[in-house]
Length: 385
Ligand code: NDP
Ligand code: MG
Image 1: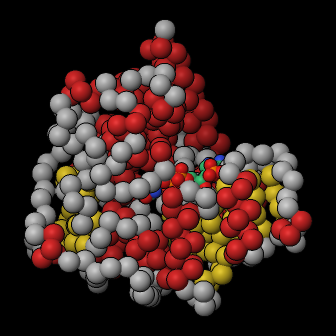
Image 2: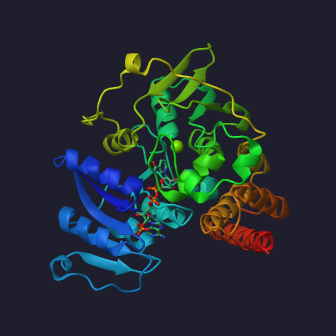
Image 3: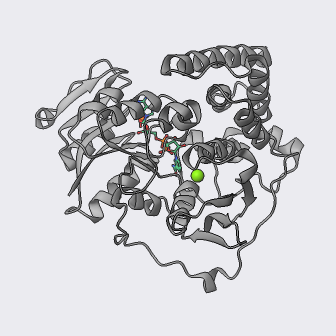
């Protein structure tokens, strides 16, 4: 039996990971659970899964119900790192949203835990730091991707018997604005951006999927996980979200991983790796689907992707700057402070101003992240005036 800490247990990925635990009570034990504000949902989870530790990072104190007092409780912003480091777990699923997961990810590795990574922002911001402490896959795997595209690439590479890849092709659904024209996209509302055609996810990643910043973050994520050069990573629009990504080899052979768009499949694969165990989900029926379609991304309508390549080529903390500016811009868009088109503008202008700061230490990355947030906030205020 493997024990698991779930950081972000009340979110979309966190609750689906707990559904995987429910399917396999003999395989997984929950060691610790962590959320930010949602005390009631966390209480219900602690009552059900009986972890050793639990935490709410967005509260300094909460009255814990009497029947949950034998769980060790932590509050405040550093509880995330505390649980990652000290809960009695084999694996830590990092499923918080935003770069706030970086310290916890590093703490989990420092204390010898295997990291199951959904939190792409942490890897985008601190790629070099994370990868110097992790091994992706293999007999001594210490980092396993949960993001569906990267899980797909990882699975294709596992079948490659050590042969290097020539090209990684990340698929993208295209989001809710796939067929919209530029002018309409720029004026889209939060309600429209939050309506994803294929996946039900947290608000931040859903907006990122609409702007294609999600794919931009995933290009950078792939660069780190698979040590890929920017010219080896391509994006392909595939509205049905059945082919989760593809890998091409020197001989022209292309391997792909397919499945229904259900995050429990990549979550389960990371949790049970290297074994494959029963998911209880319906089988993929390609005959019923009839056709799968593919298209090149349209950089004119979705300019975010080009910023990912720019950030990779610039190196240093350029990707941390991109990520931080995007986090600020998405929050401002959701609060109706800037239009949808303002997100790209804020990120692009912040990157322009800050360039590629130093990223050699955690402190340097956090410094670049904070500077980018300040610059983005300033640009947002001006846009708002
Ligand atoms: P959600 O917004 O649904 O959930 C986020 C979770 O993290 C919640 O439990 C939230 O707690 C918790 N959280 C947020 N900030 C903190 C913090 N500072 N301290 C402790 N807990 C915190 O997000 P998703 O589940 O959709 O996404 C999580 C991550 O996984 C993101 O990085 C996303 O990009 C990635 N991902 C998600 C996919 C999906 O299908 N959802 C697919 C691929 C990747 P509370 O409820 O209290 O706010
Ligand atoms: Mg993804």
